[in-house]
Image 1: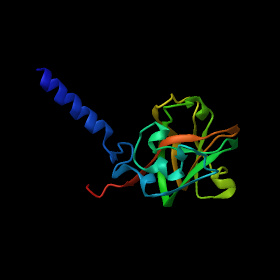
Image 2: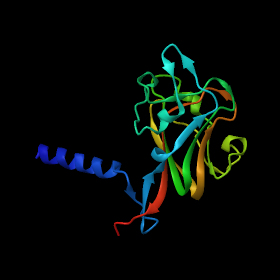
Image 3: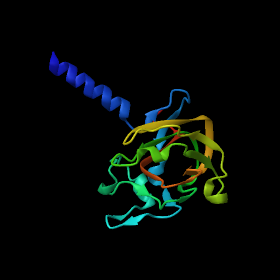
Length: 181
């Protein structure tokens, strides 16, 4: 009986974390992390003796939250730091899933804004607001839902104050036609 429960738990976990996901509110569509296909950039790269923290580390498909393992980006400390992914085409985006840094300084993300749109004006900071990060635990992963489906090519995470910006994974959940139906 214990083995059956373990198998059932693994099955539930596998179904709940699968990507792409069915999009029940949007028949004929599925949710896909389109950030994996994009090109990332950031306001400034933080460089230390441990190495560089490049923008594309946040779209490598790895949620490892320890920056020293190489799967997180980190900006220099500066006013209004930002990170942006160019999705290379416009998508209908419903949410963004973010994994916060886990080895240090998780509180820095408080107040960050997620902006989505087609403009590169002010590095994407002028695009419409999808969501604001009021809290995200150190090393935690959370999905931030837009109040409505948003069309955009650029997704920008921005902190509107002097701070360091560092995240370990940014997943952009977009609706794409489900060709299996």
